[in-house]
Length: 640
Image (cartoon, rainbow, N blue to C red):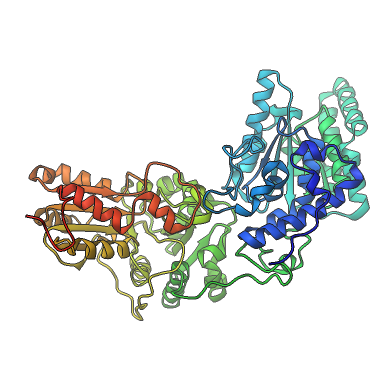
């Protein structure tokens, strides 16, 4: 076991009030120790590394200058928040991050008063910050909102919608752009720092305000021209024109790793009467840890790793992930059809689309954190005769729901949706769980919605999507490794809306949608040991339902159970609606639905999450026996 780093100064800090007791000259050492502590902690727990390393100095400077938690600090996305958690009373639990019962990997209101706003999806911080700032203004309270946005989040339209509406927040709102992966304007050394200090100073802002009021009295036209001249002159030097147009006082760019300069600037910003103000800080993702700085992804998310070498612990092997199976299947389809194009929203590696890009660089489009645009862009491609595959995590596709409805479904355009991370996702918790896609897609006319029960089925479904041109079609599949079944060399085009019988029985029908199939097989064995004959159906389609198969199963079994890895309102609800509409429920068949509970489940190992959700083989057995009122069934058979 490696020795933990020496952190004598950090050891004196439990809360931000302790940071504010330090001399400014000590903040460099504190930042170094905080960075070392974060590296060591994440090496033992895994999690997001590069983003947090890039904001260590920002974290220290913000807590030093502003009066948190009365001043509300909002971290966009939330995976930047590990250093923040360490200095806000949670250092003793930082090595539990993303584990069952441990700290969340994102900001979370229930966890600390220093997390005023929960975030795990991007680009929400400025909107929330405007809300906090205006609430204080209306209530006549002191206190500022500080929104730290970056790591790609500025590519989302929500950030610009918020900035366009931020002027009413005035000086109660400070936005810090953590610019670590996009060139808005590069810093220019000492001159950049000088300009940043200058334009944030009380003297500069005061002179600017005085000159503005003086010219306004002379002539509105002259005043407007002078304002534009100054704005564009500053914009040419500092890159601030866009933000000035949106109503912000722009400060920067500044070196986001020079903690003392950051303090100087933030103190000026804090004390300014003008606002809102945007501080543009240039940072390096993975800063201070060479393996992260040198990695292509800056160690955005890591498994447990060796601190000295940076080598991450590898998995024990086994079947390929569903993500990889999807990517390989899509590449094979694209080799056969040059109309196929791939789209993702800032998640090329997470969705497997990086492999597609290597094979077809001209046919792959990463739109950034802009799911709404990605879906509408795909609709335009489909309207022009191409075959777009939109690969987005189920939880992120929620952000584009209006485009799914208005731009795709209503126009019946053949956009193909690959919904990765369907179901529960383990360490990322409820914010990333793909719980709701069946509920929000199966209600839409024209849609086809599939769920793969294993890797072979996913391969068939990708082929089916490629061949389907009659309207929008989606497939959902989980995070993690498959079951180990053989991948078909020649995929099959599935008949739309038709399931398959996996095992034939007489008494109990298990109607499975998705990858609870293995649990259904275990449950069937347990039930048959109790003398109950079981049919297992892989339903394949949540929409359109295989109504003929459902009628058959309900007509010849005593109990039928639907099983899905999704929230209420999905597959089971639609089966019940059909059975009710057709009067099948009047015949006496017992129908039960098993799905995710009506709660937001915290992070844990996926197996434990599904145990908590009640979707394991023993849960299926209990559901069946309770429905049959046969709790007295023994292993050797039915008691007479």
